[in-house]
Length: 320
Image (tube, rainbow, N blue to C red):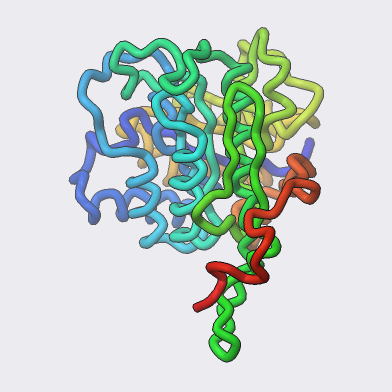
């Protein structure tokens, strides 16, 4: 048997159809997942698949912000696409939620968001096709922006009046499908970068280089030879047997359980405890979501040679 699996949960409609969609309902759902030892909740994943959604629900980043304030260990993975949202807006929103969660947020980078499409079939900002290569460019841009203002450059020294060491704030200088100078106007994450999930599959060879976790569909996709692989299971009826089978694969680090909200209680009460008792699921780690999942931050992009934002004045804007 391979290493014990991490476990993520996706709920169709994000589970809001079975509960009061107010703060209490969202907090209760997140608390149930945390108590059951779920590694992370993927919020908004079904937006990336063809569906009949005609009315916008609550934005996944809003749900994650609420859940962050009512949990202490549960990872919160926000599904979002560079579709109508520019990478600058995505980078800022995701890292802001991560600050609220003290480093427990990740990003499921979608190629297409059907819930906000509004008949837009290309990138609203560049006109590019919404495919895996376009998402690669968006992920590269977001990661560069996350690194422009390192969190540990914020010193908050009341005696000297220095808020941040601005000599460490650098331009993103992104030049792919997007041209972004930067920097981000929010400090980076305590994680360094937020971990990124991508969908694997045929014709998506570039995705391995632009993700921390690749999602493959159980029984449909071949397991990639590179990257951390997470297998998505879509039938709660066979979760038990599938966990046993997948735990034996040396290339798989986790599972992602997609289910209808009506199936959640049985999975949390019966399936996960039984799988954990058999040693199939790992125990919680400590620290950030990256720490808990055992995924080091990628080496790229390296901004050390990029120009600093404030080149002529010793510390402009860095005073308290």
